[in-house]
Image (cartoon, rainbow over all chains, first blue to last red; front, side, top):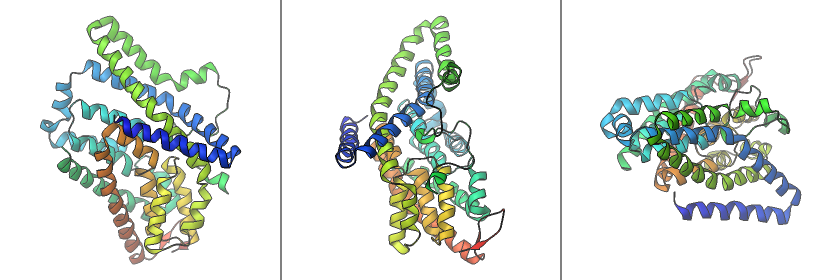
Length: 162
Length: 208
């Protein structure tokens, strides 16, 4: 974690909140209320994932993680991560720490990027809802193109970031 | 109208994206607490089992859990504040007001801008996208908005930069933006060639 980035996030968030509070008290209060609500809303699943990460990293040796998800694991690991990412529906606020823990333990950038891009760009679970609102033509073509591009992005990221 | 839009018409069970829990009652019973935290309890039981049967591993488990807990809470606080700010600062009907009329690069830029600001889960964006299409927004703009909403929201990018590193986040962003525009453009061409778009399956209306 980069401390500069974290603290600048604090400065921006609380600075903006301060500006809003000066201009509009009611709206600022509303923003704080939503902030508290979303913080505690995500907390149960977040704590569970953090617990799972702790358990995983504590029990599974890094060599095993890197053997199954690292460079030497090859294409199957990347493909599996991508398929899992595409099918699962996990909030990115929760999935990113999980991905980071695996990356730090020795998983390859390509595999982690494939999981992240699949998760964010291919929305299989919400597809029926998307079809209902936008029609088959648009929803299917968007997810199909995203599927191809998400995998391509992961491959490029894996090649550039090592 | 706005109230309706901010609510997903079909709610997904256990959807926690963006951490938005809408329409929950302020007072929760013990049963609801247990239901909310059931996965945490399961992990806690697993931790206990490790402690009992494999005490050597208990220390690294606790240390790793604690490290990630601190790291996550530290970044989640300002991110939650940003989520709150975006919710009150960028009302969802505003998106429709500006995007419906614009076209060309200006429309794409606005779609990108509006896509990064909202914080609700993606399924909140579908009714908004449908409304935009009905109002005459181009499929290109609507697709760019959806893709940005799905993959490039600011709170999410901040968490990504913190955990996976700024270079990972920036690299993904630099690749995803042009790809989103390309996707939108391709779909727009496809829709034009296959004769418009049918939106509402209940009562088919041709738009675009």
